[in-house]
Amino acid sequence: MRNSITELFKIEYPIIQAGMVWNSGWRLASAASNSGILGLLGAGSMYPEILREHIQKCKKATDKPFGVNVPMLYPDIEKIMDIIVEEGVKIVFTSAGNPKTWTTWLQEKGITVVHVVSSVKFALKAQEAGVDAIVAEGFEAGGHNGRDETTTLTLIPMVRESINIPLIAAGGIATGRAMLACIVLGADGVQIGSRFVASEESSAHDAFKKVVVDAKEGDTQLTLKELAPVRLIKNKFYDDVQKLYKKGASAEELKALLGRARAKKGMFEGDLNEGELEIGQISGLIHDIKSVAEIVDDIMNEFKDAKNEVSNL
Image: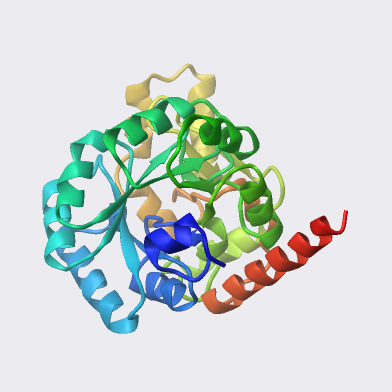
């Protein structure tokens, strides 16, 4: 399957494994790349030298292209970017910040730059900044999210109408049918996160993976918009947040409850009560833990079957 995304990244299928904090280490990224898609390391949960270690291990585990996802709010962003250049990474996905800050600098080093957005407004700003492609993420997605709560179904065609560079759809995508739907809506490829959390190679704690597999419709909620909107599985920590809201809590009180390392505690260490459990709405459609290779095969086989079904209408 060849199109602008497979050509841009030199991959077999137009699928990107999202670079998720505490889930996307070198095992997941290399397995994704070896399966014909683009694997991403999630730098947002890594100290600079830990990221270097994961890049080096990923290079040994795959000879295929892989990239790094970098939230630009990261406190050691300069060190992170220097390590990416020093280690010869050729693809960077940026998020949570102004794309003008790093795009030209990275491209001058021969790096392909993709920026993640949640609205048409920011898609246009990213295109103006000169990025090579855009990820448009609907509010169904897990983790940190847009404040406007625009769904993938409406966001993708609106962004497609507004930009003329390659477009990757994200948010609520875990199957071949969803991938086909996004391409019909105008996307050139898809970025998938939650489905790969429930993979054998994900660095998520087994207890968190089980929660994802057991999740049902309505088990996640977007919250903490006063700080940074995040979609969470409902647990004790989520309930504590809601209790504060009922009391009319300030942003400072919410920040105090959140504290530090809440996401690590939940997703990486497996504390299902006090941890922050970030996952997308599509978790209700994820029923098993498989290898990355099996997941990619399932997606592509369903995509081809769905495409044939539609062509017969």
